[in-house]
Length: 83
Image (tube, rainbow, N blue to C red; front, side, top):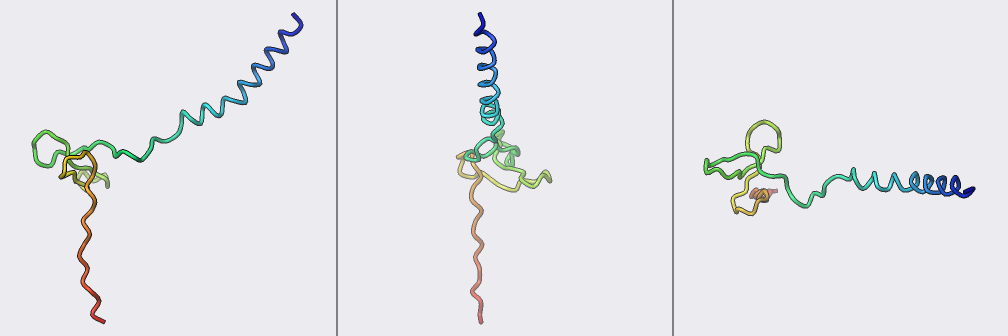
């Protein structure tokens, strides 16, 4: 019976030590591996196929290949420097 307070103190200390570890796992940000779902239907077919990344209500990124992710931005053709 005299060991009960010692046991309670040991369990309490262990909980205090491990609590931050569990709290950190619960608050980690979601991984960036998957894009958020598209929010704009640009062609009226009922399928969301564009993203408003700037927050201005206009589509900024498109999914034209149907994979559910924004398509890469096309590289602009640059003209060679004449100098």
